[in-house]
Image (cartoon, rainbow over all chains, first blue to last red; front, side, top):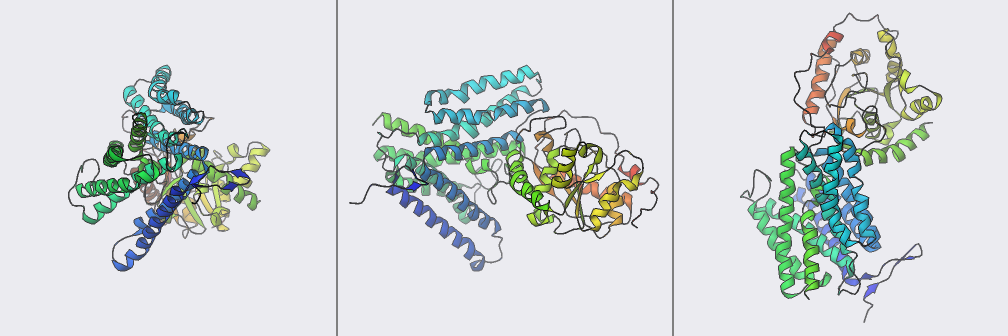
Length: 327
Length: 239
């Protein structure tokens, strides 16, 4: 019988053991990506006349994102923490640059970035209880107080709400991805903590991609044109069924999911992804931009890429915790 | 010296620009691909220069020459060395009242095939992301080099990262919008009008990376046209 995990060394440092399912999972992602790259290369020849630049850019960007995420997952929780802290910082920078703010808020914005290292710091020292209340309670109270001290009260509620919305969406919800990596080793995990993160990311991103593909192929009926002009019922339903099927098939390989637990996860996670996408779209419509920035060629900003994750990460984390406590 | 400059711009300035501004560029294909060329941008912050120096490909970096005030950028030997050797400024004297002579170094740079970066508002604005009155020196420069394309660039948000007088830069996304080049039209007033039009068009397409502000009464009429239609200065040494 082969060993249950792979042991690698980097510069004399022993990497955390990598479970075999994770190796196969990453290989599967690379296979799908290669197929996507082939499609992007062949489509212009098979069906010429349309512009495939965006598709090509999207696929190229996926290579970079997959490389960064896989590298972090293989290196261990510290690397995942640094990567997602960087993602939170960039998302927060995008958000605070578009959110309603007045000239007097410049110092508040500067101070707001401190929330990223502090919040991820609680994850680093495994202080789950403090993490849970830090942004929702303490940042929520302190930021408006500092704004009051500065004394500009025009659009006060709108600005204070905007800042807190940004902290929760860009930092708090995304941090749950990293907290999965800190799952105690005595929990049953078929592919280690990295397997839990892998399943969450694959399901969330597969849902985005499936919605996009179904929408492009058979999308006819707009689902919410005032918020997301490109979203269709066909894309939403096709993405839901596809992603549910995917979670049902691969969920038990990467996470301690079976039976009713697995069914619940398979049904609700794609819905949360859709909800995150639409909610962030409403924020962008309010601000009057299509994309949150141009950071990722073909995708838009980092906030455009993690919009679904802001909803799926906490839901996945809390469902997993609930299942573990009631097992 | 050029090695030091290229090293600094690619290894220090580019990561700094990416960290503090995200350095988004819209319309990168409109950037001039060789010199001589004139790049015209709005000005709210030193971050403007950082962005303009780092959005060009490395092979053009040694050609980039921001026009900058000698009294500010050449104060003291260290700042002066940094301004000349690293930022690569073309120093101009401000407020001498001698008009055309002040731009002689910029013309000399264009004559050697450099890409001259000019902020026609003359100094950093209040960071309101509105285009202030523009000085007509850029029109004289374009007239002296009618074959050089004049590329308008609107920089949104830089005045928030490091406004005039601030010490600590705040990371906030900026967008650099590059417009299509404007040719010399043979007439100063028309040229300045086309330039302002090009910049205002870019501004309209910029994401709202600006502070909330209260509606203000109509701004006073700008003085571009007045400046442009002033009696021409004496013919320059070059022409």
